[in-house]
Length: 184
Ligand SMILES: Nc1nc2c(ncn2[C@@H]2O[C@H](COP(=O)(O)OP(=O)(O)OP(=O)(O)O)[C@@H](O)[C@H]2O)c(=O)[nH]1
Image (cartoon, rainbow, N blue to C red; front, side, top):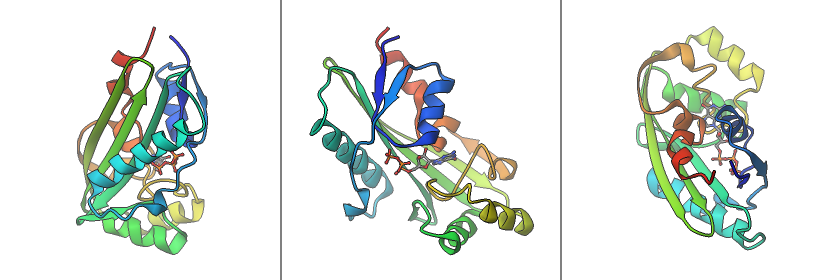
C-alpha cells in the first residue's frame, strides 16, 4: 500500500492508521481551529478539517496523498473540545457523565485523483462516571489533547451503556471508511 501523509499531529490518529496497517508519515497541518467561530458541531468539524487541508496544501504538494481530520464531542447541544486545564476537563467530563454524547469526526483525504470527505458520528449513552475513578482520571493527565477529555477506549469504556457507530470515529479517524479509497 502506498505511503500517505497524515496531516495531523494527533498521536491517536497515528495509532489508528498503524492499527489498520496504513503506511504513513506525519506532518502537522499548521491550522489554528481557535480562529473558527462556528457553533454547529458538524459545521465546526468540517470547516476545521477543510482549514487544516488548505493550510497543509499551502506548504506541501500532492506528490503524496494527504489525510486531515477534526473531532469534537457534543453533549446537551454544546461543543466539548480539548480541555484547557484540569478544572475544564472536570466540567467537560461531568457534562458527559450519565448522558448521551455524540462524537463527530470529519476527515478529508486528497490525492492527485480523488478527494474523499467523510463526516461520521458515534453516539454513546454513558452511565454516570464513578467519582473516585473520575478523580483518578483527572489526576492522570491522560485527558490532555483529547476532544471532550474523552477516551472511549480508556476511561469512558466501562461506562458505555449503548453505542451506535465506529469506535475509530469516536477516537478521531473513521479509518474503516477510508481503506477502500487508499492506493494499493
Ligand atoms: N485516545 C483518544 N483520543 C481521542 C478520543 N476522542 C478524541 N481523541 C483525540 O482528540 C483529538 C481531537 O483534537 P483535534 O483538534 O481533532 O486534533 P489534534 O489532536 O489537535 O491534531 P491536529 O489534527 O493536528 O489538529 C484528536 O487527536 C483525537 O484523536 C478518544 O476517545 N480516545
